[in-house]
Length: 295
Image (cartoon, rainbow, N blue to C red):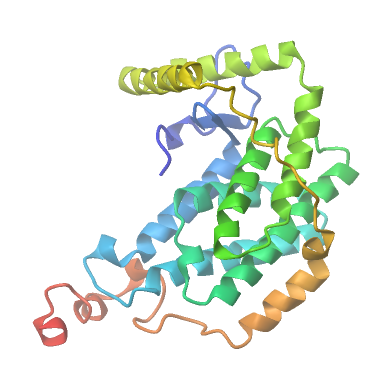
């Protein structure tokens, strides 16, 4: 989990609220909706339940990456339905939570089927762009309706940069950077001051230990910035041409679903992806101390 995330903060009632209702921080520079944070927490919990090492059992090396990929598949399917229903804000929060999960646990791109990874990331990006364009059509693609839009776009751009290392086109990255640049151009000094006040308000809600840790992190970042020879470029600075061919949802969805037809429906070992639901007998077969299996 990302540091300082506190489930009890979700839905917290503030005496003098300035942070928009339904939003919080899970890190001083990670502003999220509570809906997205809850989806992130749910995905993280499910991933934990699928991690063999958390259950003292040994399975083939691809089990956990594919178990996480199954979570991604399920989230993508739900988001696709939301987009078909024009429930773009619901899809946005699903992708927000998924982006946080992806950045926190880089397991599924390590699946040994590179083509599977590429097609999944392609449809993921096409769905994200479809949701953003849908929100734009509804007049909601702004910081008033989505106060954490900048954080979401930044997270998606960061994920796209990572996926390029897996030979994925990740065309949604430049798209998100272009949107981020537009947001930056429209932000006023008052907007920046307000956002800084939100961070301070959130820090004040943490316990003393976490407050000190967060402030140390902020000071460390300020030192690094002061020591740098050049001011770091903003995350959207290198926005390039957007390859629209990779963002056609109907095509990406068809390719993805066609590829899934021949994919295994479950794990190669064990009864299901969720190890927490296995019986004691089912777990014993793969236990670290099973001398009959592992000598």
